[in-house]
Image (cartoon, rainbow, N blue to C red; front, side, top):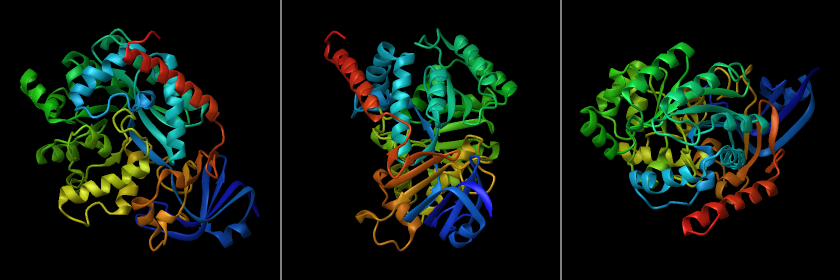
Amino acid sequence: MQYCDTVIRARWCIPVEPHDLVLTDHAVAVNDGRIIDILPATEASERYEAGVVVQRPDHVLIPGLVNAHTHAAMTLLRGFADDMPLERWLSEAIWPIENRFVSAEMVRDGTRLAIAEMLKSGCTCFSDQYFFPEIVAETAIDLHMRAMVGTPVIEFPNAWATGAAECLSKAADLVHDPYADHPLISTCFVPHSTATVSDESFTALRILADQLDTRIQIHLHESPREIASELETNGKRPIERLQELGLVNASLMAVHAVHVTDQEIALFADTGVVVTHCPRSNLKLNDGIAPVVACLDAGVTVALGTDSAASNNVMDMLGEMRTATLLAKVRANDATALPAARALRMATLEGAASLGLADRIGSIETGKWADLTCVDLRHLNSQPVYDPLSQLVYTVQPHQVSDVWIAGKHQVDNGSLTHMDIDDLLARTAEWQQRIGNEESGMPT
């Protein structure tokens, strides 16, 4: 018999690759953090002597979910400014309160809260866009969470840098040195939007990204007002401006892409631009419904993200999958559009591909990191189970996530976080709520 660290036996296993495959009564063998075998459970008992055997008889085992766009620390602003349109939400609520409170301490505590919430809902990797990215990286490493850490680029002074030039300098140091070969952390550049970055800074960013072979993630064509403002200021649509500056290529991750033309979708397909779809944030801010099916039909890679807890309110990728497929059906006027299997693929393997990680995570395949999520279908809302894949996408709630592994480390065990002090986390969160709430009410902090 061959020794391995862990064998996970589940009623169903959905590896995502090959597409649409559902395996029954299978096991996944893990050793040194990586998947070494996927095989029938009876054969696993004969072939492997495992340090730990995890039995999940009513569960479905899937790749860990990939949150391809969020602002993790903004969990501390959850519910702070609800029921506002995007531009007012940013200018009147979010940016002023960030100017007052964003700090390394705030980012650490908010990111811890976000990671706990994501783990509990089956997410094993997130792509972050926020200030103090080095703190986000340190926090993810400390909690053994996989992350793509975005380094912000923005013209105006902020708590992290004095402007775009210092953003780029700090970003280059972060990308080039400490995380170049880290097993859990990768990096990218995250200019906020075309409205907040000058042509000169975009040009410098493009040169730097080319030199360091690094991705660029940007909010793009999120709202009609964004496009109208660019047309008024520069006489160009945001995508057109980025194309002229040499940024529309395979390193670009276009977040939102709600208001794009057929020609712009074709441009994305031709150049390898990936789209990150954030359906619930777009709905809440009344930004619109992205043409996801048109993007997929054109051959564009489309990932899923929650956006921030300030604009979505929850960091639940299971709910994001469900919302994405329902909206796609309405937008396409076709009940067959974006079926459950494709939604799961967007939340796993296409999310990994959008971050340049598809060779490491996103599917249950031998040689990949054991980033895995197990979901209990023996709940009233998921019974009876005719099709476990459909039940996963259309019925499952976060409380049904029983187990999560990241690089083989058991992060959620039978519904409980294994390496986080929840009482301390809640106490720190309550302190921030009091500080920020007092600021809003005018009371001294």
